[in-house]
Length: 233
Length: 336
Image 1 (tube, helix red, strand yellow):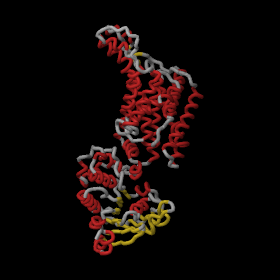
Image 2 (cartoon, each protein chain N blue to C red; image 1 turned 90 degrees about the vertical axis):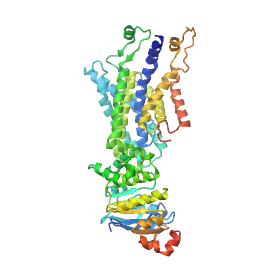
Image 3 (cartoon, chains in turn red, green; image 1 turned 30 degrees about the horizontal axis):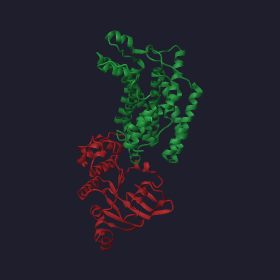
Image 4 (cartoon, rainbow over the protein chains, first blue to last red; image 1 turned 45 degrees about the vertical axis):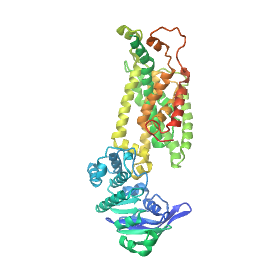
């Protein structure tokens, strides 16, 4: 496995939010982390990014133990993260947002920017507009494009479809499939479990901070108990 | 003819002084707004940092003059400016390393930072008074006027003479140049863009791999440059007195907030809004009206509604009104 998180336990002070969680993802694979509200999905992602203090567990990227790395160092190694909210620079233009995404890279980024506009044509015509002026779906595209600018090997998305319309949600999922084809590992936390599982290779279902179920997207979708409990019948 | 006389009168006493004073405020306000945007606190030590920077420039001016160096028709202070700036940067970075960094690492609240900056204000205040004293110092040399009233009257035959002091022109040119360079830096260079990004969304900036320590370092450097230039221009135009610089903190803060705190372009315009308001509201319009009225008036009323002693009250009033009715300022800054 390209990215492995083993036995993650941690939380905020005394309160444990995640306990013995395991996740892994390969390049060219979409893996969803699902579960009810407050199950610790976002916290698990933060733990993998080094934004949550771990009591135990290891995070391994490409055979390298990065458990003790801080967030900035993990990003330099090729982990990109799209937060759920405040995931764009509203006072910067779309173009500048993308430039900031490639802040750590020293090579010419013009081609990379063009590549992003090919992937997200909707934001190309807005490249000199302030990102704060865009619609919800376009903002989300800018956010994902920004995260892709530093050539990540793994992309983590925290609820990329939160608060967008069903049409836009489909659009974003299609983009995520396109990104997967670039041989990038994709790990996402999702609320729209049904839709997310349809495009996912595998899924993890978290309940009260622990791994409850794990399987391929189809397996989870077809399991009657999971359907009843988590997918609304 | 009377209309022209009225216009010249107004230029002489309101428009030209306002643009000059506005430029000085604008530079200071941009410095305050940058510190607010990046370090997220209102730096009360800024007025005294300006005083410190100006003091350094004055000391170097004296040194240069004692060596017989001068700039001819230009003030020697312009030659001393780079040295003054360097010293001010060193002092700013010293306070950042020894004081602000400690509270940054502790993740102290903005209120704590404001109180800390007040402490630094007192220290700088005392240092300046110990080194150069509390008195008025005039360090302007070179030629005083570009257009003098007498020459202007002779040349045009008007009753009113237009005076343009060389310090006014120097102020306006230096400010334009500084702002041109600064805004190009902020909008065109990678480092400048990363500063705006950090100011806009700190968490995402960190996620993009932007180094906060470098951003903070550059912010202090730019703020120190602006403080020294603004202070020196003000001192050349009027005179240097530490207490005046402390007082100027109010119009500078007002300019920052009018323009939208954290927004450099807003701070630039805010400086002019405050300067025009202060000067236009405290000007005695008697003579101006006299030129425009078709009949002569023997009124003893000066038609000056607010005494110049109250000019800071105008800044304060604008500050309060903006905070109540439009707290994000004209150019949409952060709401405090």
